[in-house]
Length: 117
Length: 112
Image (cartoon, rainbow over all chains, first blue to last red; front, side, top):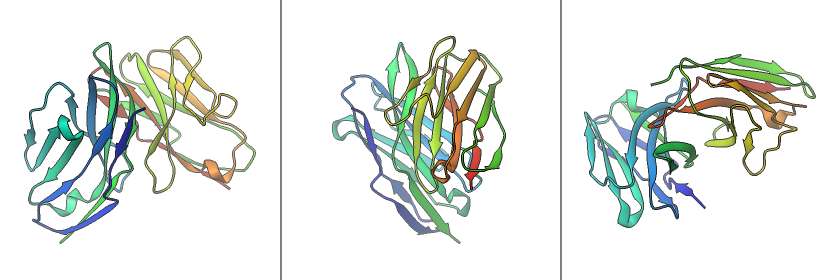
């Protein structure tokens, strides 16, 4: 069975601090996809990143970076120099690789990030 | 990418009634999904909407309660039947473009 665990329910930081959101997953599949989504107070789900299981390169996009470690089944997300606009709920999700495509997503419980000015 | 619209965006319904939610995508997609997000919770998959055949439901969800239609590759509906206050949630339509899964804006349902 597939499972995603985000152990941090809520994190509060002061603006400009760095913050890391943890994600640990379980799957018996050898190939799969991992995702991060942001859900701001407005409610829409915003896609942030997708990572293939066979690509363990870390990725950086502006203030965002992701650390994928297959050996520990983790896909952690770091925000550098956090800003108030980063305040949101962040979800990690897992999908099987179906004929090379993404399938249904299994979500973690989400981490609520509050960035205080 | 895919642009997804849902109707209605929100509704307040009486116990025992049914509501049908529509999901429209701006391009043809093979895989469409319906999720539920209860207040303060994560997203839970209700079912995969299959074009031209019956939806595939996840454990804990049944067709009688959540009938789904998928008449073509750009449209699907989810009906929440015989509603109770426990059905108060946000219902989200999602699609896989093959490389990324996108989500609609959601339908916020309140059952009194």
